[in-house]
Length: 417
Image (cartoon, rainbow, N blue to C red; front, top):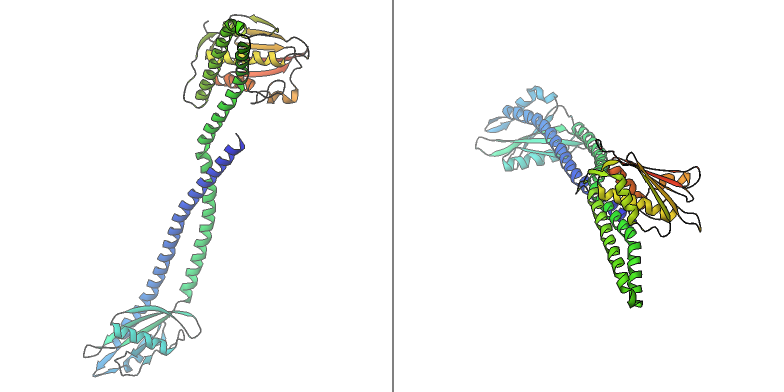
């Protein structure tokens, strides 16, 4: 895969990872906010319930007989318990305030008086937060009461220390925040892994496209050069056009066959088409490929025994052609005629040459794209290996004792032939 394609896929994977992480992190943050809000409401309700118990009890003890009397409040046991309370006048009240005996949280009486005035003026229960004289957080509950004339003239104010509840709430917030951080990290990792799986088909398709382009360029380079040479020769020598025209047609037909084979290979690799498996006489197919391949003075011999295989004849024909082409190109010593011997038997095609052989360290790389038996750039042997693997066969290479490379293509044998 080219660098630009790999960069595009990496950017796409990063984008998918970010989208996955942001979407799931947003839901996680919303959930965390709901948990924290619910905890806040629950703790406030618990505090307010305790405050409501005190204000309602004290409110029942407040007696009115023309004037407000608070003397009986001091006899109630609530005076010595927490939450502390006070009975204070509103803006229309004219009575002295009363404070419980026990002070659980020191609070400025003026602050409590302000709460009492607000509750009496509104005529409703009030709850809120304030600060004690020492700066501690307190929860205040206020319940107004009426005089004989039906006028809100005062209120019972209860005060509870909110610091313990706030400390527990802060610990919960830290726990939720830490959990969110860990989960977001896990989501990012999961998004990275899932995005890799998601773009795998796109990466495979892109790689197949690049392979198709590379193989097309590789396989058409020589025929196009030959076709151009024939055309230039025909232009320079009009008298030879009649002889050159049939060769041009054959060459164009060969180019079309190459293109068709490449397209079939690409579609098969992409899973669009299936192999056209059928019984084929491998010996006859090999002889036909040898007869149709220009030897250019090389000495090519074939020893074949009748053998039937279950293959796609078009692909196998091309694979054998690539093996033969590789031997003719690189299976010769400098300034010597190429000598190639092909043996067909038991579903195996062996192509032996008298060239320099294959370096043992590079034998495994000989089938990689853009490498040939001699180390030159090319795709021929990689295509042969792909054809072998597509049919459940193998492609092997080793050096002969007397010199030269031997390539062996093994294909599944057809029983009953």
